[in-house]
Length: 66
Image 1 (cartoon, rainbow, N blue to C red):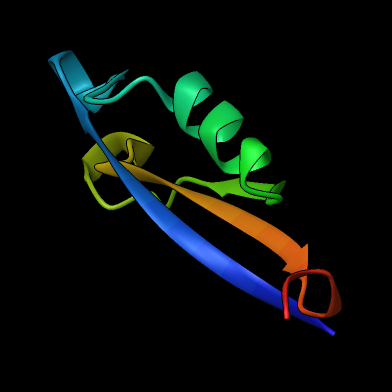
Image 2: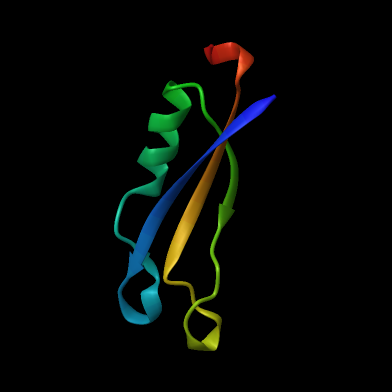
């Protein structure tokens, strides 16, 4: 069985193209805690197909951390 964690990273700049946080560091930080990057989701919420945020989805086994 697995558990999942969702981390929202807001985007800024022209057409919301730049992450407000260093998502690379967020991935490394979560990996040190035993999380595996499962998916990066960027819903298109603005016109022209641009996203307002990224959602990093992490996964880890429940049996490893209980």
